[in-house]
Image 1 (cartoon, rainbow, N blue to C red):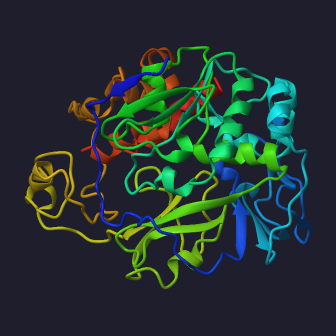
Image 2 (image 1 turned 135 degrees about the vertical axis):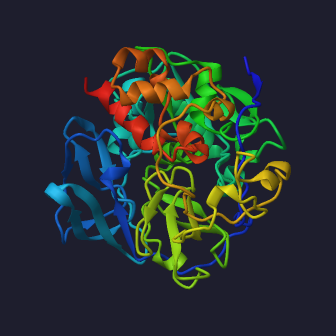
Image 3 (image 1 turned 120 degrees about the vertical axis):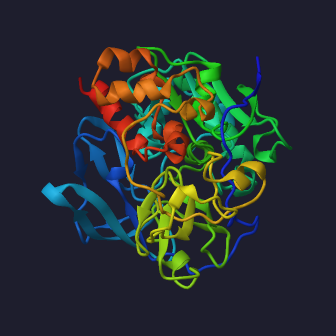
Length: 454
């Protein structure tokens, strides 16, 4: 039975530079990269191609020896030009020089009737070979799901409340057939429900309307209402021993295209956002694109932070870096390389803050859009209890005490305080408002890894 949930806790970060709902024309990227670092929990990555090899879109180029069923495939066709490694030969990127047009590997196609009679084993085998399985993420831990396990439910969050987040209704318009096919496949992977969660405020996008075979829930409230972790907590909480899988709307469409068209389609419409972008909007590209073409000539100044993703959870990349596997936007904001007289003691009308002490005027005017930079407005300080985290986390969790348990490496306390329900994006807002300037997302991942490998 569908549910309606209204959340009160949270904080919307309103920034200048939201993408206009229009497709903009930019020079296509020439190189693309698959980054093993995007796949958390990958233990033993192995490259299955060599420099100079020619690949098609959908050709396996990477695998995890610890999860060898799952194939990580090329997003485009072309030549493998570099296998980049870092310290201790850590695998960083597999770069491909793209062909002028994409040549696809051919996989089996299924009709609507064939999809209905497809078995779970057949569906999993096809998804693993076809390269779409990495779109399925397991909770707890936030890692690529193990195809040999069965989740109690599957969640798809169809809206994003992160700062400057793209509108899925716009980026996926016209993809309703593939979205439904992807849902039909996902239903075969669980004995429980497939939850499709939409924004309870405003109209429902056509791609998400008229869905069958799923539970469509309406969620409303400030960020992090769009986080799938928040939705899981209120609809089907995770306890020790439970497994829940999550898939992005784009991932559902990609799964549907594999089964209906027999190809691995890595095309994606991404949002170019941020106050330092001369032109904002949506661009059609492929997973792992080089962002130089979207940054060069489009940045308002030289000292710009380029982010693959959003300002809360995204990854800092350089002007010639590559879009992350799960990223759906590029964000350009100013670097904050300066010191400020009196710092947070000085009231300001130009600063965005959750706390009244720093941003009194932003507190009074919640609808104003701000230009933010990367300055942290202070250095790391002792971990103090302020009660602020609990005001922005709409979960029955005590984040302050959870972080202290992680620092103390208290396994029992971590489990009891809800670590199994969280990944980095669930505490990103806590990090944003933290007066102690702690790297809470990194701290949480350290706690997750302690439990994973204990």
